[in-house]
Structure formats: structure tokens, C-alpha cells
Length: 422
Image (tube, rainbow, N blue to C red):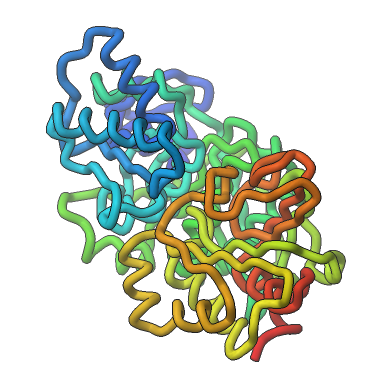
């Protein structure tokens, strides 16, 4: 028989099978179950309704207050309180809020809670971020998360795999966000529907972990079940100082079968911008240049890492945010915030006229810290630009990487980083 892909190997190992094939159903043991302040309350309600009296493992559940926190209103405060009390009642070890918190999909890998070869489910669609570590990670509903919290397992239909191979040389300002926006632009928002997106090639091998996290984060925006990068020396350098348990790295067999293979030479690729109202509407920045903006957001689980803030600060330099534009910078976690503070990045943003926020998902989902009014337009490093995603249904969101978002904040209109870099 043909060999197996990474996702097939992980799900085979977690279900006790020697071999699995796309379309088969398995019940896999889980290494982590994740919920946040939006999804945990419903999961907790379901957990109690089915009569569960214990969680499967106090060490393998993570509750993260990141979406509407610091609490934007009474309802958000009550949801955080419910999650806090549940964590206390059941002795959940990994409960994060306040100054210990951060955006879940940046926080958990940095805390060493997700490792290569893991099987992870989260009641959040961007759980696929962790595939950058060579793990199988996917989003589920709150009801499924409740069952997983009680049982420590979940059933899956083995997905087909798509192989994406990136070659060539990346330009100075090109990062993971540009690569994934370009990819979604090529295959569409349903081009990887219920498939594993395996990211390969020389460009991926040279990409840092921040870029890999960004790409896997947006696998769901192409309809993917998950995104994956085979664990390598770059992964090992990230994981080894964080891991507190053993893990296993997997790579696809040379004769593994793929539903399709895509290959692109990335030499000469421009920074990408996805215009409203779908991530698949990606264009080179030169085709969007000149669109006036009211707001620029740099952060989110997609681009809130220290590496992203460094890029943005480098582009801004000694410049000022354009009159009439609000620049909001959101470090992904408290640790990112502290590191950016020590490096002087936060001072660069503040002096430029930006608002620097506490770690939060905030404006990404129209939560707080940057909700748009009718007729307003934002460029953002977030992952979705659906109608009303960041506020009023008559507002618009353009997606980009941190370099374009920073350059546009200075220019007052969408421009490439080469137009604004100091």
C-alpha cells in the first residue's frame, strides 16, 4: 500500500491503527482541548447537562480568556467569571486571564502546551494554527469540545491531503501572511474544504515559526480541516526550550498520496492585500495602492507575534501615523508585550501616534478596541474580512501583513512597505 501523509500518521497513532486512509472514521485520543471566553460557557453548560462529573485530564485542558477581554461589558465579565469558577472547581491547570493571558493561538504554543505529533481540538476555528508545529489541530463546536473535555477523545473522518510547494526567493517584506493570502487567492475560500493543507518546499523550510504559524492559522480560510508543516530544525529550536513532555515528529512518506499538488515560484511576489469581503480576494499591493483608510490594526492570532511587531516598527521608523488614521497595535501575549517593551518597539508605536493595547482578540471579530463605524475602512493583519466582521456591516476590512498595515497607517492609504520604509 502507498505511504501516509503527516495527518494520516498522526491520526493513525492517536487511534491505535497501523494505517489509515482518507474517508475512514477513527476515534483519536487528544493531547489538548482548548476553549475561550466565548466558547467555553456553552461547552461548560453542555458538560454539566450530560452529567459529566470529571474532566479527562486537568493538565490537557486550556481555558483562555482572550476574545472580549479585558472584559468589555457585563456579559463578557460574567462569561469570564463562569470559566474562572469552572477552572477552580475542576482543578484546570491551564487557565489564563488577566496579566497571564494572551491570544490563545499564540499563548499555547509559547507555553509549550502543543508539541509536534499532537492531536488537538479547540472550540475556535483558528485552532489549525498549531499545525505549524507538525501537529494535527482543528476547530470544533462547543458541544464537541464539552464531550472532548469529558472523554479525552474525538472522532474524525480522515481528510485527504493537499500538498503546497513554494519555491524561489522571497522579497524583503514578504512573509507568511503574503504567502497564505496568495494561496487562498489561487484556490479560493473552499479550495481546501475538509482537506489537510501540507505546506512544503524551500521557501517553507526557510520560513521562521512566526510565518508558519500565520500560514497554518489561515488554513481554515481556504476551508481546510487543518494546515501542517513537517517538524524540522526550525521547529525543534522553537519547541525544545518549551517542551515539558516527550513528543514525536512525523513527515509524509515519499509515496504518500495527495488529492492535488500545487507549486508556485515565489520570486518577485509582491506583498498581498485581500480586498472586501473575502480572504480569497487577494491582490498585489500595487493593484490596491491609494485606497484611503480610517484604521490600521496590527495584531491578532495571525500576526501578533514579536516578529510581526518588529516588522511593523521597522517600517514606521521615525514616521507618524497619518492624520485621521487610528493605528492600533496589539501584542499577542503578555510575554510578547514585555519583549516588545524591552526592545523599544512599543515606544516606536506610541511616539508615532498609535494606540498600544493589552493582549486581546479585540477588533478582529468586532469585539472591542477598534470596532468600525458605518462607512469606515480598515487595513488589518487579522484573518477575516467578511461583511461586518470588524463592526458595522457597511464598513470594510482589507487584510495584509504587518509591513503593509504599518506603511498604510503612515501614508493614510494602502501602500506597500517600500513606499514608507525608513
